[in-house]
Length: 507
Image (cartoon, rainbow, N blue to C red; front, side, top):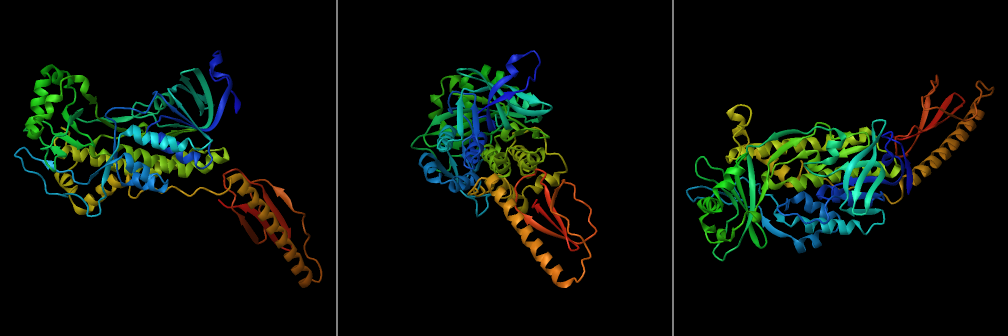
């Protein structure tokens, strides 16, 4: 569908003329964007998904899938296909101390903790995007880079993006920024990111497995005094190593050379002595500048941010994918019906942030505390010493484990898809309501004729009044419908024999 765009930037013809029109334009083909697109098209919402890269392949991206995402995949009927490409790693992630000792198996875990899975993020995204492409209202543009937001009278009305075939404009009822920690949408909207830089960065690399690798090889390896720890994560065909170093010291790390890095790795995990010889080039590594932050307000009229665009998560506990996906589930549940009506209120956007902000901020607090406990942060946890120890109390530990597993206090459920379009159901509700009014009018007139010898009141003809209720001195009888939406409905009012009957949709 083509629509006329307003001349937002006077004198610039690129911002006027015709544009494609969709219900929702999602910017960013990461976990949050792809899941939101899939859940919306399942509801019949017309979605355009823009992904800046030409494919989903990224190296050293988040690949940990917790219980909340498994729950979602099961709801969507995709769990079996996911398990075909995933690698189970269980819930044992011990701490390895410099003296060679290891924390007890299951220490700090709830008895009900569920196994986690590792899957290359590209395979997960391909699975979800492939499912979305089964729906005719879904369109995916790879290589679609957003250049600017289209705004009119303070409301975001769409986006301008560059695709392989040139510049395009798209008008949308809602634009969703799911384009990650460096969100172009967030910057264009002028929504500030409040950051709290951690005191460390991570150098990622992979090392091959060996036949003599220990059984509990994965975990956190604490370094010698004054040196940061190292993370060893279990992957299907290799070990993924996260070497933590003080923020701002990357140049010194590289100046020391690869021999020094190999020695530092074996000093923490001697069993990697042979595998580390495969590290021969800095191109085998990738640097993650660790940052945590949040946007105080995730929305503005016509625009919503989710995932890392709204709250940047640190890599601690590997919860980034799951928190982004939970954001998408909430957004689809709350906004899908509104998008099908063609109108999304700012208060609806605010409701997404209200539901997701508390668990997200608590998880960020736990991430900072956990980083501090293993020596990856030079910033002590704010507050008294007892507050730091309080993180080990069983009730607090239970909350932490729930936040890690579920991306909140409980996993979000995908709401059932309505069998009929909302507009059609609303019309039937109006019809049912009018029939009910007519029946009540007939009953009231019959009662009045039977019990009143002389008429004491005049029956006013039924009329449609304005939204503002008309003051009535007589008792009122309400007939409710189930019209979905926030449009101002007309009220059907009739004063019959001393009673006033009005029809008004629920909500």
